[in-house]
Length: 426
Image (cartoon, rainbow, N blue to C red; front, side, top):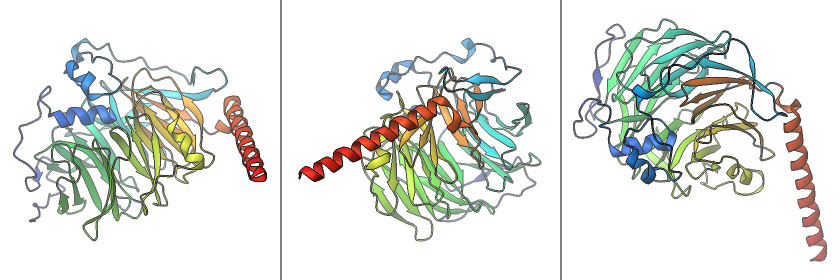
């Protein structure tokens, strides 16, 4: 396949077109998105759907009816001081509300050694934030002409990319805010991620059910895999070695693609009982977590395809009261966080297998979650137009967490005792 022309870093407004991946599609027009795009949006809650009569058929929970944009209330007021989060009296987690977007916040990240925050929104903007005072440091210019569905940032926080429903992926220099390049596809982009080494960008497609891996420096195509899944992609990501790409889909399937051999290494069919919304690797690369409309999270061995359905991991399937939209491992994999339709952020102890805490406070779907590298902060993005920055540094000292830990310890002791008695009697 011929490579597209290289984009000049100084030619900010020039477009860099990849070879057509499907039949030519019209420019983005609100209300005229494809069925696959709308369905994917409900899978990870990435798009507000104007066609309310479709909701009952698309979401197993029959989602609330969407309010037209012109009827939405004015921008949320920002509390001036730190307030206590979570309505549970025993779980006082301090948080800050960051308000500045005019529509649902679809994606969020920590960057610049946890000193800055990055967000993308349906208001067609990508913003850089100062978490200390909650102010917007930069609105990235030459912004998309349609809702931003996902952002990603290099490990060194030098470059930012954003995928939008205008069928483009844009890249900026984080320090200067300068647009580096723009790639336009002939199909809707539903996910985009940098590889950990910053060399590649993977994009997930809606209508074509495929993924595209691109060289992030010279903007050339490494591989395009059409019909990688049988239905729309919902999320894709690189492993820590930047050699494998995991993708999940509305078809309930997980696939692992090898960049070097250009082959599918692993396929897990019917991984969940409903559409899979998101996926993330542990930092060792040995395990993959998936979240789903079926209200569950699962952890998989990516070498064998085996679901860790014994011991601690079973309880990851009991935590959210609605579809799970997102998941993210702490850097040392000691805990996992997830966000969902029930408006909560769940914190999971991976080793012991229990939910340490449920963070409440958002007024609508939690669409994305992130953890700081130092594990002291959690960031959540919501359809309520805000982000929340939660301070979890002293989470193990919270009475409710201590209570849960004791309950888990007693349960494990009881299970060991029962196992011993059975062994003795047998």
